[in-house]
Image 1: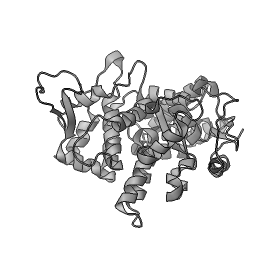
Image 2 (image 1 turned 60 degrees about the vertical axis):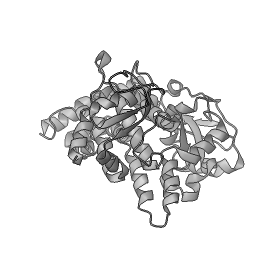
Image 3 (image 1 turned 180 degrees about the horizontal axis):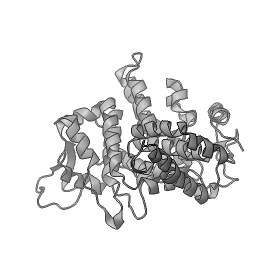
Length: 375
């Protein structure tokens, strides 16, 4: 099948719409599979529902889940078979007609169309496929609002930013004939970037942004980051940089890509070092992210693999750390930026701290100096 066929299928998944909202499970499963193919965890067209796949599914699910959504990777692993490109290999005594849900006894593994598997192995084509998947997330306004809350914005700020994106800025673009529907109806990161650039050039935008002390600029910047997170723009760019580095062997590339997507030996070393979330002590590792202290793109290949350049964090704390809303002093005490409006909303307290080793300190100093937004 041509790529256009799979892009169309990815943009129009058959999704559960209980409660009027689309379930993100199929999107999360396909994103997880592509991540593991890129990382080399899945090297042949045989997809097993193992711990690595469950953990990567959870990573995406934590970003996209709403309301009563439950973290059940077994559900999309089984029901993706209705899409036509995802197939199940059943164990002896079981078949497609007699099996209505996933079980280890019934299902050996999944596999996809060979053409689709080849497309997923390309970091260039997989970017197109990931972007297509975002089209299924119709309720972007709600997701954006929750994303803002998750990074520590107050309810008031979240409502103001959402109102600016869905209301004022969209209306200004419509008034000059540049837009036909609200910006929150645009699912493509790359398409949004074009509208963002046009919006910032509008005289009305510049006047209101000046009067509003940069509120409209902040709303656009945060929506840009939100869509980039959904489409994994930064991760894909970093993987591309590794894969095109001619100084690296194939083994070295595999190790580095594994590290970038939070899998492999780097994650294992962090789990061994921390045992749970470095800040809260929460111990369910399926819900924890392997985060670099000194950002990936600023680190050498050696620093990228150094366990002392890593923290194991809950998703909301990982996001706040990456955005510079929190950092840590040389004794491990949390530093909370004044830009983080509601630290209590993400479980942060001033007295939080963790035990660090001397080798952590250079990386923490870099984070404080280059990323932390200050008190």
